[in-house]
Image (tube, rainbow, N blue to C red; front, side, top):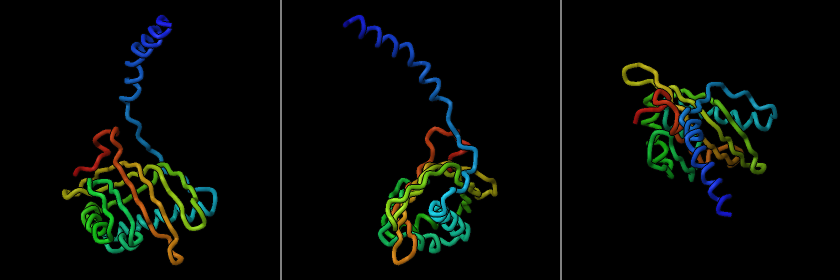
Length: 173
């Protein structure tokens, strides 16, 4: 039994450098996600497009209007969770200064009932810096939507920058 335990321990000890070597190469999504095949999934995918268009208006109130009154936002480039319409709007006032344009790189859509859905995946934002240069930030995202009074609203939005991507794909804080 001791021999078997020693052999297993030696295997993991010797294999550890190889496992580490694989993890040091960051994975970056480079493609644009295809439109979903099913019409019901396309409807949910279109909610991101609606949100992205609202971002490009530069109006924090237009973006905030897409969120439910009790929505929660865990934003990409802020450590503070936003849980009121005022806090969500305040975040977007600052985020919109970078003139963000988003592209979905990878997505999974799940229907959670007749009036609820989740869109989760990876997106990349192109941000314009104060000097006019462009910068990209790639992030994991999850939008939870609920149909309220006949309109789809964001009830939870989580976005976190990829921790292991090259610095060229991170937004500055």
